[in-house]
Length: 371
Image (cartoon, rainbow, N blue to C red; front, side):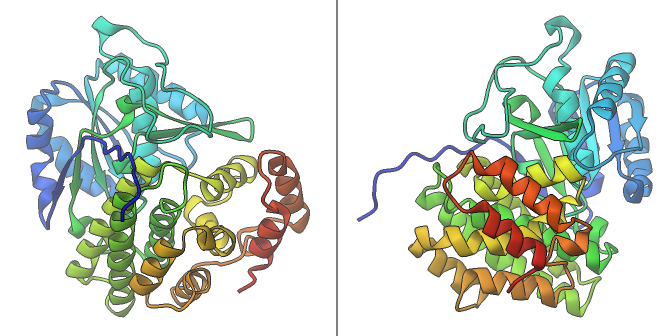
């Protein structure tokens, strides 16, 4: 018998397929956006050039500099740019940093007739992704991901200031349309690919044990894990395999959807703390921390744990994740990312008051990279 549950799904339009970049201008038109601010990571500038030309008179301005964790000073400058060019929508091409900057703009910049300001959905990192504000109507975002972060499927935003990362949820930052074109990620280096997949796996794994997890999320998360594992192994054999790249985008989309509904828990809060305090690389931090948190949390959800183990073809979920990341060449220790043992202890002490779980052990194991 299935226990009673409540599932919240977020509205989004998804377009996936080789050559879908050509449809970005059409997606902008469907949303009724008249002036587009284009945001692109350095690696996506050639693709952004094509989109800029396809937008024609709708193109209003462009930002080509983004940074991970969305520093507040960069977000403020981007908001000013959006106001300066009179943007009514945003196209973000690239990884999570580009999409994150687009979200920061959409969160606080509305159409001129509606004014500016933070909506009721702004909040701290304890906010659940299923508890979203519907206040205001921010700038519509069309996301064109070139990595597998899955951020494009969530209403989660984040900014970093003074070594502290603040996150929250608000429907205004949820991309209205997501265009997945596997051609854009075909030349993504294997190291970046594998780390990005680890990030996506963190979304689908943690979605099974949060307070808002439900059976629908479990099904989505398990299918995401299967697709991500299969896609990653095939890409490791042939980096330009278009079908494998499509599989990874499909899995990342599902993983993001699962997290968007289930919210985040201990794992993501730890990673946000580490990223904000020590500017650690986002995806690689997930890879180092996830197996250690999974070792502690997964036994609480035995049915989901067993299904994920089947999807990943491993006898133990935490060990299987560790081995998959290791085989793909992703760092599995925070020490490899430059964190000192003293900093790991400092982070654990800062976080411990908010949970009864032994964070010190988790972060020590993550720092040392214990299997």
